[in-house]
Length: 205
Length: 205
Image (cartoon, rainbow over all chains, first blue to last red; front, side, top):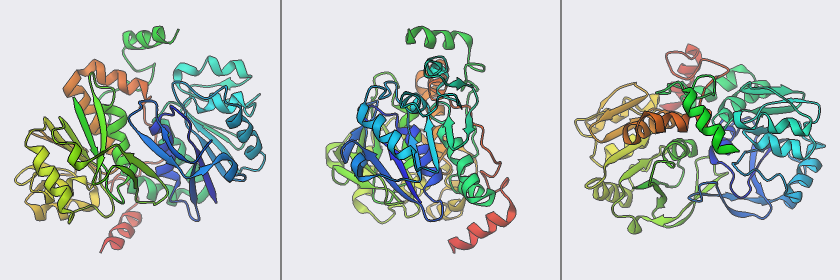
């Protein structure tokens, strides 16, 4: 089972690492990090590079694709959109985290489907004919989308359970001690102080 | 404010990325990834490399140090232990995630202090004169330790709040949409099915 995690300039690193840490121990899994060219790819903070082990051309039939998001998702990158359309034809699962769903949508893969995204992108994704929901993890056929950044952990665990069963996924959860205890309750626009949410929205215009 | 995240062969990637994603937007923060040599460092799955931007010799006075854990923490690596002892003399915060606390303890930095670690390492860390607790995030003076793997997100957010205030930390939480909704409740040995916990413990002997 080949799992291809897409990297591109300015991706958000936790978007990629949540699914990686929860899916990489699936029985028989081989994870490849894939980008236009193999080699280091800089994240959105410019402080960190992850190494792509394969170029797009070297990965033609992954079983699972994971597309992380970014503050500047690669919506106009035809090489990436073409690759996604090509590999999606034979994937078992095509997945995203955060605004990675905008990239899947820009490739035309989510048309008429239900999907989620970062809370700030739930309106934008409708432009691609997607029915957006504010849910944390959305399954629509083989398309699995997670909400913003940290939701990739929940997406990955949920998918791991579907693929390898509850006991495997619970083992992963125990291994990564995923018993979240956030010090605040500000992780969604419904829960964060209204002034913070408004400040964020204003910055997006 | 320089934040140095230590990388070493077979580190666990989410241990490093949880604090990175929650601390890197601190006002004035510069994050460096540091390893014995600059360049790619392979994680414990061998599928992923993060790029160390600096060697240990190039980072002599970070304000914050973050030590990720590993299934094989670098307890016998004298270069790393020496570096930790040297930089700890002037850090504002010395932190760890998961079995990273074993490395801090092996460097002698946690003697007589309270600290946490991955739940499987809570006995082992006592050998270094540490009072271990099963808490998710432990502050003892400037020493901040997080429990296993995913606890680095809670550790980072809590520390971000101490440094830059609640509003900053809540903004980070909202940005990374950290509103966890795990599909199972198996993230700690108290909550996971007893058979899974026993299986894990047996594998550790």
